[in-house]
Image 1 (spheres, rainbow, N blue to C red):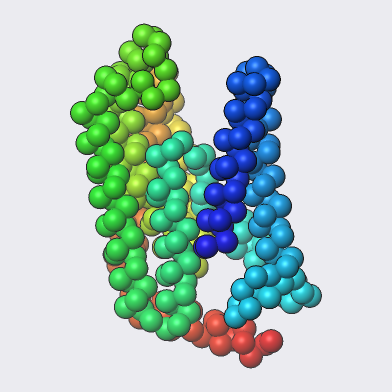
Image 2 (cartoon, one colour; image 1 turned 120 degrees about the horizontal axis):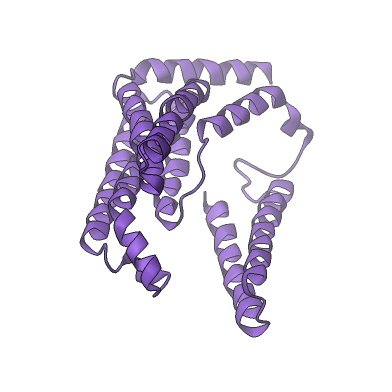
Length: 270
C-alpha cells in the first residue's frame, strides 16, 4: 500500500506541473487537459511496473521471477470477476476516500482470514465500514447545507449553479451510498466473494437500476434526475443493502478456516 501511495503522489505532482504547462503556459485548453491525464497515468503505470520488476520489499516481494506465472489462470478468473463486480465508473473526488477504504479493507480482511483470524477480519470490516460511513455522512450534511454554493468549486456560471443546486439532493445521497458500497466490496474481495458479488452487481444495475432509470427518466419524463435517481436508489442502494446483509450474516470463523485451508493447499503445491 505504501508503494501505491508514493507512486500516486508522484503522479499527482507530475499531473499538476504538466497541467500548468499545457493549459496555462501553452494555452492548449481541453486538449491539454486530456494530454496531462496521459502523463499522470503513465507515471502510475511505469512506477508500479518498476516496483514489480525490481522489487523493493525483501520480506515479501524481491522482484520479478518465473513464479509470477504460477496459478495465473486462477488469478485471471479472480480479476475478471472483480472487474464485473465493480461495473460502475468513478464518480469523482468524493469516491477517492471510499476507494481508499476499498483497497485497504480488501487487503486487511484477506490477510486476517489467511492468518486464520476471523475476529480480526470482522473487526477490520466493522471499523472500515463505520469510518467510511461517518465520512460519507459528513459530506452528505455538507452538501445539503451548502447546496447553493457547492458548484462554485468548479464554475461561477449561473446555469451550472442552478443545475447543481437542483441535483444536490441526489448528489448527497450518491455520496452517502458510495461511502459504504465500495468498502463492502473491499470486504467481498478480501473474502474471495468476487463471483457472487459480480452476479449481485449485474442484477442490481441491469435488472433493477437501468430499467428504473429508463422508466423514471423517459416514461415519467423526469429527465436527468429520474435517470440518476433510478440508478442510485434502484441499483446502488439495493446492491449496498444486499452486500450489508451478506456481510452481517457472515460467519468469520468459518471463512478464516476456508482461507487457511486454501493457503495451506497452495503452500503444499509450491
